Image (cartoon, rainbow, N blue to C red):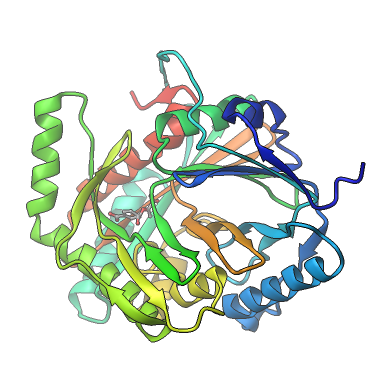
Length: 391
Ligand SMILES: C=C(O[C@@H]1C=C(C(=O)O)C=C[C@H]1O)C(=O)O
């Protein structure tokens, strides 16, 4: 039997994990369901550097139409797009796709091991605080309103990716769990809480998050941190900058657009966030989900305001390449429907080393030590899935 275009019906979620092979499978699980895609029927090539994501979105549409015309029964495109167009995207039309309900793997309570200096921090925490201070001087000068600064941890790794993927899905089943085999053998994995954009027919949704507080194991303290976040003028401002930018990018493409006036609280296993769900109806139903993503990416949730000034400051102050961190990950089908999440709360496994990434939005009245603590807490998503915790 040829596997090309095979569309294996709804499988139990457990069988999806059993079929997972890190070097060849793409996995994406959201509240809408899970999919495991295998093999490359067609690899979408990245456009020239100046083509940008809009060009890539057009290529994806053309590749899907081409695959359907060539007899592929259910072509979809899956993969990840990096933060910057200086890195090639990793998008393929797989040979086969299995669908399953949202992944919620069973598991027992884990005992976490302390990290205890096994990590290499890039930059060192003190240098990160210094970079945040420097960013604040730029922000106070008024040239920028927001910039997102990130840091990375490199940790020795045993290379076992299936248990890592299962633990990511188990800890945050309400989010977007993903695993992407990159072309050079590395694997991108994570559990993102943030939907950049989804399209179902004419319906568009985006769920910008910005403004964060670490969770606490003590329920009273946890509630108080959530309340503090909802009432924080600094976090409300940081959040509004993202919502305004998302609405501004979607408005020209939508006949109707609903933007709630107030954010709500949302939580992951490790963080509280301010959250706004923006919904709209497409003016032109021919606009694909990746075209919508191209209009939005990078939002100020991961870059800043204004975008180009923030991009330059990030290049100046971050001593590592973001690569696929703060890009997008997801899928699109031949009718243009799709789901694209931000690649945050993620890690890139490279043989015996795994690199974790976490960033925080900086505004003029940010506190550098609090931003360091926020990034430390955000590492918690991948760290806990690795069975590790900060001392
Ligand atoms: C950049 C990250 O997260 C983003 C930044 C946030 C913030 O600054 O409050 C919140 C959610 C994300 O949009 C990350 O997790 O690495």
